[in-house]
Length: 360
Image (tube, rainbow, N blue to C red; front, side):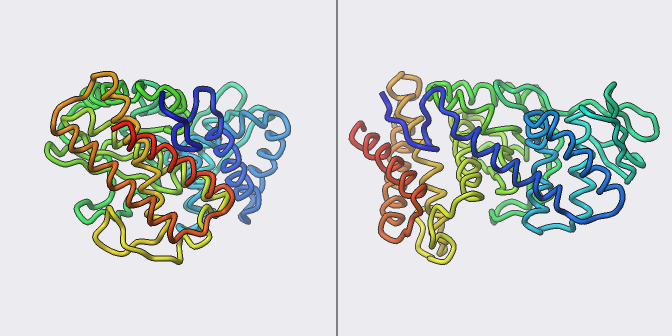
């Protein structure tokens, strides 16, 4: 039986991610309600205030939609012009929430799911574009317990840190959406061998975005301002895809906590050699790596115990991940100045790592 680890390998029924998401959504709502703008924004802010009083849970659920939350968090961080982020987030919020208290109009140009209009009008009977056309259907499709998206609205998707990739534009790589979904569902099937982690997946992962096909290597990405959105290339190995989903969703979970707690007081100021990058990295980057890949090692353990994955290539990969995790955790322990939450996270992560080392 694998030990649990806070924000890394949850027990069935754990609601930590849901609580973090609620707090981050509240931060996004505060940004929307306190941003200064014209008459249109003031009207929506008053409507949103009344909606929060009438149906707070419904409002927060709508704010958590990737089309809403990402631009609002980008606005919070000041990474893009405010009006552009409002023009993206508010119409999507109106469509997701509907009109629980009264009709509302956003009379600025909108681009919703590939359709442009002068605005969007929402009543208790439904939403429509201001020119009378219906709101286009969502481009997300079910993919196991999460969603696969062939459309993306993350304002930062063009930013890329990986030297071999130029942004994260949607790219099916010559495959059909059905082929993608089949491959990803196979990969997610492996994650079921971590029951608590799998149960948490609908909360921690909101959308999987395709960014091409590579038969020999795999590339993936996630963004602090887009919680639960994972970008990944298609790969013939379902284990590689499963690892990528676990690794990027773990980043998303730690990024949620980082909006509410420093985790490492010196995480951005202390730079160090990294076991996973050739250049110097901030200490927080090393913790992000360990936090992402200790659960990957737990997945390896669960698959080996079940006899699902075996063979020399798998064992080499398993050993490499364990060794890199140990190096990363030792660096964090030796150099880190954790907060109380950070200390708990690192301690439990290290306990899981030690169990996996002893079990191999």
